[in-house]
Amino acid sequence: MPVIKILGGAREVGRSAILIESNNKEKIMLDYGVRFKEEDRLPEKTNLDNLKAVALTHCHVDHSGALPLLYKNSNLPFYTNPLSLRISEILLKDMIKISRYPYPFGYKELDKLRQSAKFLKIGNRKKISDDFHITFYDAGHIPGSVSILVEVDGKKIFYTGDMNSQSTNLINPAKSSDIPEIDVLITESTYALKEHPPRDETEKEIVDRIVNIIENEGNVLIPAFGVARSQEVLLVLNKYNLKIPIYLDGLARKICMVYSEFPNAFKDFSMLKKAIKNTQFAKSRNRMSIIEKGKNIIISPSGMLKGGAAVDYVSKMIKDPASAIYLVGYQVEGTPGRKLLDEGIFEFEERGYSKSTNSKALCEVDYFDFSSHADKSNLYEYIKEIKFNNSRYVFCVHGDEKSTTSLASNLNKEDYNAIAPEPGESYAI
Ligand SMILES: [Zn+2]
Ligand SMILES: [Zn+2]
Image (tube, rainbow, N blue to C red; front, side):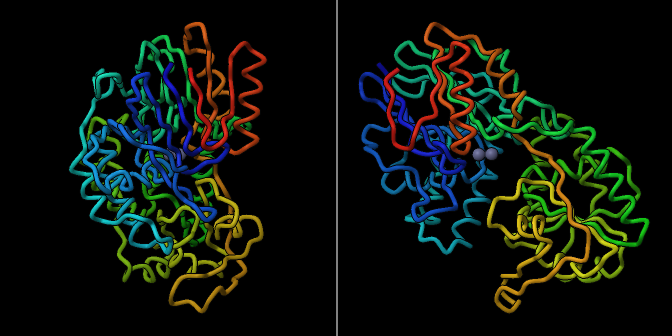
């Protein structure tokens, strides 16, 4: 029987890594990410002899961050697509450059990773070793994201990766009706306990609130992750035809340039191109004047205000009661964004500011839910549409303890064999 070993992303969001071993002891890895908490940021250690390939669902570093570690002494085939490769490279370079954590790899391994890339199109079934076939499916999470079907020893294992079955402005949703009959599902559980508000209402509300701030001569800063979230927000603003200058800063600019080369990765590429055309790219020397002029919208990483250009804007806006900071991504506990949202206090830690200066926000601060993961109802609906062979095995991963265990126990009430595995556990299926 093939064996599934969960090396990370078990009862946590971070360091997603799944090892699958065939009867003949051939192995493949699905994702190999890092986490940003605790001492050890890498997936659990295990014997990787006879590893035949690694396949990546998407570029986010909780899925891709540890990949270079697999390239210390090997040229392992790396299955991905051109867009995910390009963005992974940008994010990994950045991670290696700015991290104070001593990752046991560097640019040399990252280079080898790039050279080992093999591109696979959605829906193309590919034999990747004697025992393994894989097929990519649209995951609807961010541009380029895929779910992976693994066929081994007569079993079909489907790994969702990060998944969104709800439509966004940027890309098409994941459709479980596309998936063939499977034996095992490995599903993300990020929002297994939470519903997102209807997207169109969220869009309308943020636009109304922005218009109000601008009418009162203030600025609006939208701190957003540079990959996908910034561009999604840009599309929302463009859809409402706002006659307000929009500036894009930091990594978000670079990602826009990369996206411009991949027309097929988007739901409406001409809309994206138009939105980018209607946007001005901000440079660090212009930041002050953009704020002083007023009546501008600035979209800038980092999304949780841990650094990046957004922090520069915060320092210039935080004492202005006419302006607003609208967060559009989940704010992890312990981040400056979370503190600002919960306590109305911003803690400047960046170089150039005296260490940890607290600043009370006089500007408006709020959060709008633009998640790129399926919410509770979507997740259950998605799983229930999947056709299973007899076993109905479901592994609930990529969610905190409560989310993964509650998804598993609810599915067990409905005739599934579901489990929320712990890190390092192996299952013969
Ligand atoms: Zn992701
Ligand atoms: Zn993830």
